[in-house]
Amino acid sequence: MRFAITTKTIALLLSLSLIGIATLAQDRTQSGKTKSDEFTIRVDTTLVNVPVAVLSREGNFIPNLRRENFQLFEDGVAQEITHFKNIDEPFTVALLLDISDSAKIKLQEIKSAAMAFLNELRPQDKAFILTFDAHVEMICGATNDITRLKKAINQIEAGGGTSVYDAVDRTYNQEFKKIQGRKAIVMFTDGVDIHSKKATADSTLSLAEEQDAPVYVVRYDTYIEEIRIPIPGARSMSSTVIREGLSKKEYDQARLYLQAISDASGGRYFFATKPEQVKQFFARIAEELRQQYVIGYYPTNLSPSKQRRQIKVKVDLPNTTIRTRKHYVYQSR
Image (tube, rainbow, N blue to C red; front, top):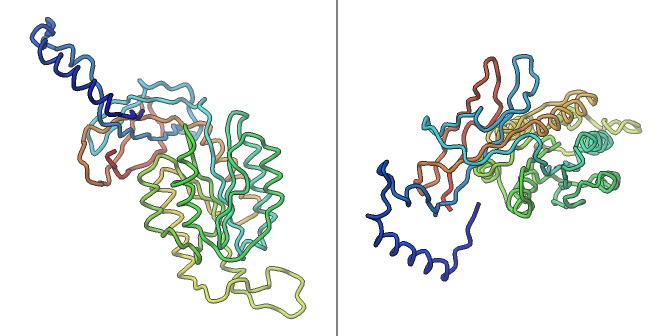
């Protein structure tokens, strides 16, 4: 929770502080605590939210857990869980779709998978859709109107170039700032970036560590299609060279980036080698989003410098697996 502190508010707080000092001796209780110990106005408002999914040994999500079931540690130090949202809380998904040249041969697959994902959302959940080629474009703002979202997807046409980093940057720095509550990015791409102008791999990885919205990636590999030699008169689109000059190394770097941003944000990475896998992966992502808890805390370490801090979450149930982010970058506000 953030406070808008005005000059008038500061004056009031100072006045209250002076009154409190004058009467401090009268405020002590039998336990030795003062009233000011029992009621504290928090000036630092750096709340850290941690999405958490809890699974049984068989891989089933465990519902109906409460705040008391969880323990959270930052750099090995126990933290007080001050905020808790259960799995019934609605969420907003940013659906990022790669419509670059390399996606031409998979465009229908992309559309079909995106619509299948929308079908997995609950009525109270929302989504917005960003497409990216050489530019990033919002094709549908945040809504729970599935018909409107699908209509926007149907109108997608493949473009040229790819700007993965700019799409992630815009989502975090612009779109998510307008949205309250649980948020997540779901991205369908091969990960190769050749046109981003505002953002880089490093800058977007930093954003993923600093914010509380996990990134779920479904990656498809277009490298084989890219290196095929055009055959005169060939009827198959897959026999057309789409982006010449890209090396296997660049595709490997794209894969490593997508794995890194999903890991840094606490999301998941999937690699689709067959069309039918794409819908399966999107269904898994939607299920995990539906089953996530969000636990929040104010760090006891208030060092103002940016630091990467380790997070460990425990739950008081045996034989369970916890999916959550492993670290984040602290930012004082």
